[in-house]
Amino acid sequence: MNSPSVTRWWMVRHGPVPCPHGRIHGQLDVACDVSDDDDLRQLAQRVPSHSLLVESGLVRCRQTSGALEAAGLVLPPPVIEPDLMEQNFGRWQGRSWADLEAAKEPELTDFWRDPALTAPPGGESFAELCLRVKAVMARLSLTHGDRDILAVVHAGTIRAALALALGLDPAVALRFSIQPLSLTRLDVTTEGWRVECVNVTGL
Image (cartoon, rainbow, N blue to C red; front, side, top):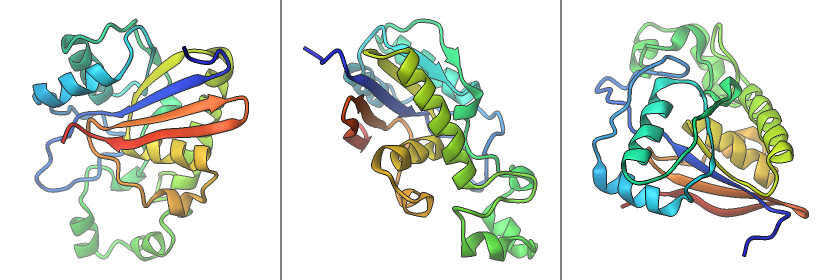
């Protein structure tokens, strides 16, 4: 049996976003590909049904939750938490890194010098993303203690959650690889955070 003092976060990255040109999506509301029935079925079997479902509000998360339900997972209507959205890349959203390099984007050099603390023009830094994710997870862990929480979110969101759970500097958390349709499991216990798994995929 699960301890009554444990809140279990099942963090799933949404399905892959088809983009042959490698564009920066950030908080753009773009669709994802949820056609991989095998991966979705395996993922649905790993996550407990009747979890509290939390989404960022972007369509790619809603598509992924719906595909998990179609694969057999029983879920309630989602709780929408906009502060779990991906990092806001401001004016760079919709462009590719190669395009920014070719255009000699003036802020790009500073960004690559310190990508965790530097905000793209009109956007936010990864460190700022970490702060808003921390606030949401602390609040939901308190109000939904002894629950399974399924958060269908984004790669940056999950890296921020790992920074929180492991007490990492944001620059270190950026090193995590978070694949589409992967599972990261974090528990909140009376003794602090516990990491059960990171970036588990169906491969």
